[in-house]
Length: 228
Image (cartoon, rainbow, N blue to C red; front, top):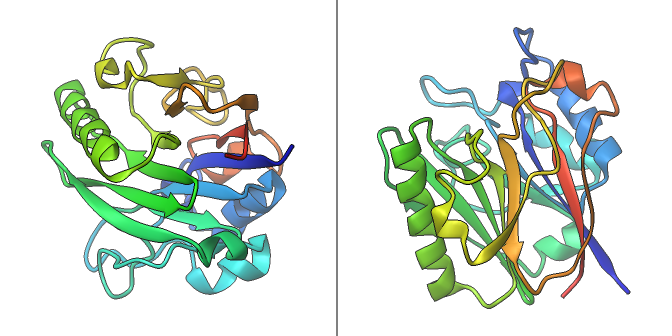
């Protein structure tokens, strides 16, 4: 049996809870987590030209992963609306990536990674529940159109409730491995993974190693699935 280790991590612009900017801490967390594919949020600074907060030049050297090849928010950005997906280089050779604009009160978008037997969608949903509902409805409708049956949706859902706001995910298995926010003393399960029901979940968890409690205001979450 071949397994695939998936993860999601909100980097909080590599500033920990309050600063300073220290991306080497986040890279150490990603390296220790050892994912095959990881969806990242807040990889860019928010203002101005939105330059990268996570230095592109250090990613493969430190983690062995490569960022998805896509059109970013700006010339100096790493992601789109602050999001990107890192993956093993051999997976990147097979990957097709597209961007999915999302409705809401603030600019948001999803990143859709298509592999031959799996589609991974990275998300960072809005702060208002009405926006989150509309965004999930758009994502699930588009996923049904562009993807095959093997779909994994993961990211910062910004939703603390276990049922409200997640109605559009009725066709998915929603996994909240545990509290992931705030990182020093986590209480809320903002970070989640939703997957097609027939995908086999082998294990899941919240990662606390490599000083993850200091590297961001979120802890990364992970799940191991049987590779389709």
